[in-house]
Amino acid sequence: MAPFTIAVSSCALFRQDNSPGVAFPLIKALKMVNQRLREMDPAVEEPFKIVLIATCNNMDDLKKRIDHYNLKIEIVRLEKPILKHLEEIKPVLFLSTNEQNVREAISAEYGAATMFQRDYHEYRDEVLRVAFDGDGVLFSDESEKVYAEKGLEAFFQNERDNEATPLALGPLSEFFKALEGLQKRHQKIPIRTYLVTSRGSSSPGIRALKTLQKNNLEINEAFFLSGAPKGPVLKAINPHIFFDDQMTHVEGALQNGVICAHVPYGVKNKLE
Image (cartoon, rainbow, N blue to C red):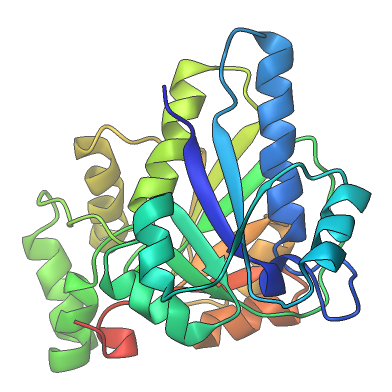
């Protein structure tokens, strides 16, 4: 099986003062998964390939930082439009602090998200924990369009009418499939996935679960919050990264010390 490529910008991995940046805990956790899997089966190829897209001018300094933290990752200098690099790299996930680059990647149908250099809680690396919002992230924004155009009651009616109809999958679904597929192939692999959604547990929640079921996808834990703030739940989970398409939820996560990335996709972000 070919490894899954994760592309990350140098500005997301390191801060300007050379200290670990907001993407650092995730990258370290991905490297930990690689190591654990090799320990379980030395014949297995490492599942994640990390590619650092260098946006800084001092490459020697960047290489020293990578060596200092023993990351052993591939470096690509940003010398052409970001989409040209992504076409060559073919990542299942691209993380950057540059919103325009992320928007271009999303428009080209890459899984991508914008990261924010904020303080975050300390992380342990025993298990890689990744949390996803539902609509506009794991799923398409088709239900969000109903809410935006017709209001909340129309949204609930739409979900009742289409409870058994799966939603189309969204921009982060390929990254989720990579994690979920590894869990199925290697039962002891240290990965846990979470769905943290504003949907309630009635028809909206049922439709989300049926979407996963009909795509033969399994998630470890699901939280249906019925519009309640996501920050406290995410603080308890303490994921290495949480993906959401709405900045209000991103801000709530950041205020709770949770690493969060914005997915600029769909009607909530005026992207079609």
